[in-house]
Image (cartoon, rainbow, N blue to C red; front, side):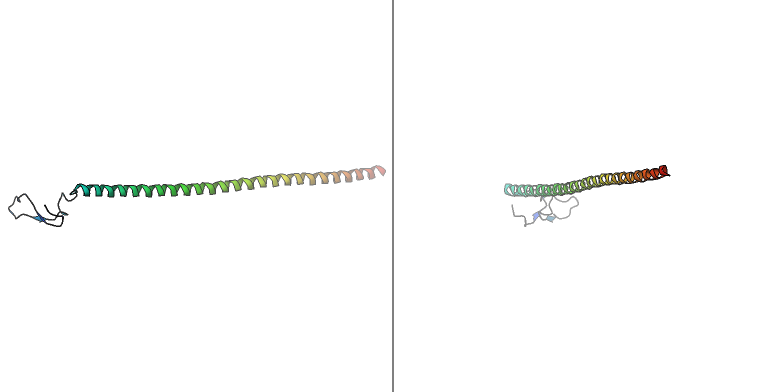
Length: 126
């Protein structure tokens, strides 16, 4: 008939006797239907392209999320390893301190025993 830019007369007469309405294809209820198989294929490829683009965006977002999660896990793992290292170091330090305290106690005990025996010796002499 005509191109989409030409006006089409409404085919049914109006019920109240008013003149026929002129509407453009864009206003027509059928304007959403493709006019030819080429247009249909074009719209289908547009939809496919949109779907492909959406999938790519979702995939990139998912990969970015995975990357972020992986980085967060790596950071957390490093923090846990550092905390474990600090705990082991502290444990070793505390054990070393306990050993040192025991050594000092032992030396003090030995000195005390020497003094005590010296005092007992002096007391026996008198």
